[in-house]
Image (tube, rainbow over all chains, first blue to last red; front, side, top):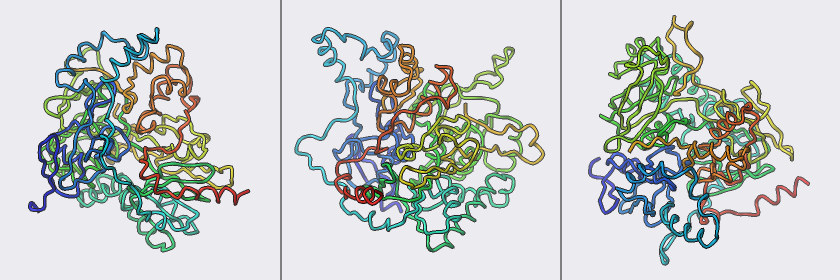
Amino acid sequence: MSSDKVTFDFKGKSISCRPGTSVAVALWEEGVRVLSHSPKYGRPRGISCARGQCTSCLMRVDGVPNIRTCETEVRDGMTVERQDTGAFYGAGMQKILATADNLFPVGFYYKWFTRPTALNRVFLDMIRPLTGVGRIPEPGTELKADGLSNSLVTDLGDFSKVIVGGGPAGLAAAVESSGPVLVLDEHHECGGQRGTALREATTALGNRLERFPVLANSGRRLDGLIKDFSARPEHTFLGGVRAVAGYPPNGLLLRRENDLATMNFRELVWAAGAMDTLGLFPGNDTPGLIGPRALYRLLLRDGLDVAGRQVLILGNGIDSWLSAVLLAERGARISLVITESGYHTEISAAIDAKWQLTTGFKLASIRPHGEGQLAATLVSRESSPSGPLHSHLQLEADLAIICGQGKPTFDIPFQLGIDMSLQQDRGGFIPTGAGESSVFSGRLPDGATVAVVGEAIGETVMEPIVPPGKQKNGHPEGSAQ
Amino acid sequence: MSNPKTILCRCEDVTLEEFREAFSEGFSELESLKRYTGTGTGFCQGKGCMSEAAAELAVLRNIPPEKVRLTTIRPPAEPLTFGQLASLDVPEFQPAREEER
């Protein structure tokens, strides 16, 4: 294995890594935790969503700016650079800015010197070079056309019923469907964002699995659905495909790597799941802070090496335990902070892993610490006036996983004309009028239908894992905040 | 070093403080707050911040969260390159529409 290494260049340094991993992960393992700086304040950013949906990992690869390095596989001889162009990014500049921060009022850059026009021009000329991400390729750089293979169009076939999302909700919809359906998922296997993680964890736990009823039930349900789905040859699963736009009345724009294709549907089931919610607290953009879905992709898709790393897991529910089991399997040192107390002894007895469990704390803030690490400050949930000594806790880690309720993906159905409203108990925007229902069904102006199911409508898999006999004092939901 | 900023919109680097400040200046809808502060106009097109922004606005205005009006989110939902778009057979959407009439 060690002979077939891929070597690429980062800032003149040659970095060797295993083939098949992503640029972002190769850099992380090499200790490069800051992949970019934010456009305005020049704040350091690291791997965040791990699915090409955020700005944090955008870098310049072989001269081409704005490449999602979390989704770009390492290639021999590639050149990777940060695309920091502003004057903010000097090493000392960050410290100066942090101290001078209080001198500048909120939004000063668009409020100061707006008149007279001549002064405004001078002001803008002064501050613009300080900010921004990336620069356009130098004239003469040859850029190749991206998607010209056009194989996605042919692979799509002529299905009129399409299900976006191959997780439990999408598969359940497919199994119930009478006619042939096309199931699309951005992952290459069906099972959803948690699928592979769940399969590995249930295997790893072996006969201890029954002590984790939620993991056991979810694993069994998923296995059953995959079996039922594969017993229906009229259905097709197409992996690696992402819905990138909805065009009314019934058009979908789909992307598989650089290939785009359109399709018109008569029936759409939106089962695209939820996205990690990190929450609003000071330092919520600190490198190393990710959600469980990102962790699953980093571990299972990219093979992120966490052996010996310190990982902090915050929160409760299936994702915190699933993350813990996967990380323990890979030799990470885990601090698990659950937001409720009462059953951690049973849990730690059920797993041999040596992790540090803390209960009754909630996250207050996170900040960068040392070389690529982070430090989390936790405060006691019951901040008792008598116990200031125990009300604060500081934990340092390479990664912090925030396990809360995900936010439903809603943008494509919304673009198609399904009205959305914010339901905080469901984690975010879900179709207006969905009420307490776990399935929303809507009709588009031309008669095509859109159904929204699963985590995309806030169906929660956040049930805390309560051991038998302890149910009575268990709260229904946990959250990292 | 410890910079206690809470980032609402990571792509456009909008802090929670800036969003609140904009609200206090009189921008009271998600749509106008988006245009004024840049919240949700970046690479992720609001995937990472729109529900947080809406929840914050509900608190600021003291209204139920479901009463906050969402902004327009225009397709595509993620950045595409010209190279990718060039590979697309554009007229495919048109016949379907005409068929329906």
